[in-house]
Length: 342
Image (cartoon, rainbow, N blue to C red; front, side):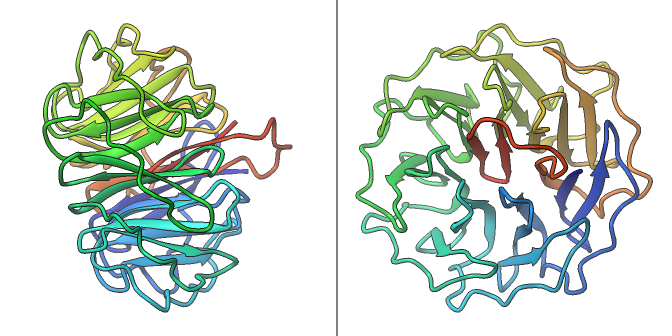
């Protein structure tokens, strides 16, 4: 069974639906709601847990998940240092990390059906608000998109932060918003606030030389970025119509796919492909707050809206793994609030 979760700006701050080529009936809200805007949402690899990063203390809330919310886990013993913008489980499910708006800007914890004692902060901290966080598919690295030069940083990861990697030789000129590793771990892409709005690099325990920009750029500030499970497409949600741009990917951007026939109704924030790669969804501003489409090397006809809409402007989105299927070859790719498996 597959589910789809949307974090949003108004109560109940997170909405989850069964998914089967369209939205099912919304699940009941958590017994204890997240404490503010759901900026990020993620399922664990096993599908047994769901976490929401939010604007108000305790800044991150996590719940058991089994076709519905269980009783909220205890808050971390040491809270993140401010409003959390994104959250991610490591591929093994043994760790959880959040990017947030006050020093140290990223916080990470062991995870075993609950938060363990916070890991020591990185020796070299991000220099500004953390807006996106992603573990690499192997779990050996962690990357943060930040509001400060160089706007994208990364560290080795082994139950804690290693020494920060050398910054990209070519960085964006303003704020990092979202980050994703390709499913094979060979590339890293991040969305940012000024042209070209998305930038990509080869990755091999460090940043390679920046790939050429897309021939047709996203139309405004990039907020979300995600690879398809196969790694053959990369999608960006952004702040200017058409609100979403998708490109073929093969060690670089291909020619942009045609826009959806029915566009999202406002600027795109979160974006996610289903684990099978046959669907794509965007969390966005302006009602209906979420738009979803079949995907097959291009957008199909928009699915019907959920019967009960999310409670305000969409901020983040994620499909769960199909828990009724046998997992395929081992692998995982991660955007700050969207984890996808292949």
